[in-house]
Image (cartoon, rainbow, N blue to C red; front, top):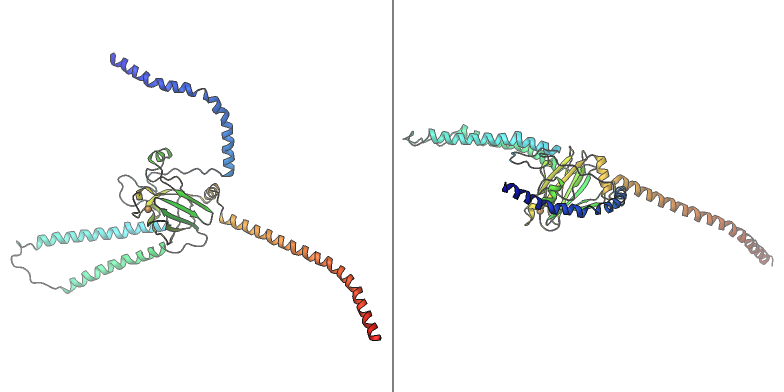
Length: 358
Ligand SMILES: [Cu+2]
């Protein structure tokens, strides 16, 4: 019975400050309610100025690691799919077969040719056929790997096609800054703290305050560089790992095939906070991308080009108008001069005639 009493006392002690707090905050409510419309108005104004862009929620198992998983993340680029196929169906089977064969040969030699079973050692030192086989087969295996490997490498470094979006990633100690030169957007992405990541529903050590947003199905030209030491921009779901070297620009291109949130990390040991400069890419529809560009205060290249063309047209029109006005003024001045000039000329001829007459 005493235990219940103590528990009740403890509970009321815990509840008391909360109740007091509730009473304290209660009178403030009407003021808040009054402030609400103003806040709402400010929010709508802000929304009009820069349309809100809701961040997509990451999906467990997509674009991020899974606890205890083996293998490579699901790929969302064509090159990634091809590379993953090569890893799963070409390299792994060859590696497994080779390891099993070598292991079998070791055991077989150890058992079959042990000293106890062979008191008189064999004097065999050459076997032409076997030597040809163990030279030729590895060569053929290497050629078989090299052909798809070189073609994959060539695809990874093929220059981006016309109309690609340029994304420039700059590695800094210890965050990434990004530029979209075609859209006039620049920002820096910092890692979220554990608490912020939890509140935002982001994976720990991978969530950032400013995601890269890219459209699905549009080629992206990725440029990387660094401001201090070598970093590496790596997103496993895109099969991309590109060094970011100070004073140098590296380039690759990729096209994201599926919308979603994809995470990566700096993959070059760059200093004591190397593990804390994650990368987060949100792939959206081209329309959503346009909305995001607007929300960041940028402009689509077509919009920019149209504005430039309009400005040029306006300037041309103004020039044409000025030229026309000048021509009109000249025309207006010309007859006056002509009428003024005519009598003078007549006088001159008269004078000349008089002179010759004398
Ligand atoms: Cu780094």
